[in-house]
Image (cartoon, rainbow, N blue to C red):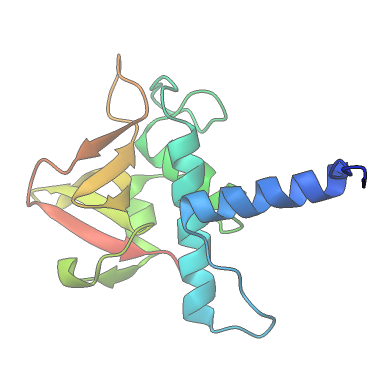
Length: 156
């Protein structure tokens, strides 16, 4: 009879990392992979980071790690995934590649427009839903996009 070997801490950590990647749908890239794939991977990582902040309170001007406003959540999530974004929703829109609704993907930014100004931002989760920090008194949550007055941007 052979003895069962317990997995080493390293193999358990590796399995946990693989499970985490699988849970957020991240792509493992080979060295020299396509830049579009890298951008997609960063966006997927940022989406997972935003989702991990579910329940964190909204606070105007906050950029984490425990409280957020809308652009603070996107800034924090992409920074943790390895990409820097400017501070405000409008500045973030101006720093992204603008894409049509038909091309939106998980991890893209969704910008809410009123008149000629952008007033809110969230991270697209798929199925018409975003992760965002909505307003004072609310918490980071997954919510259906409530208007057609939105623009989409991809962080590159």
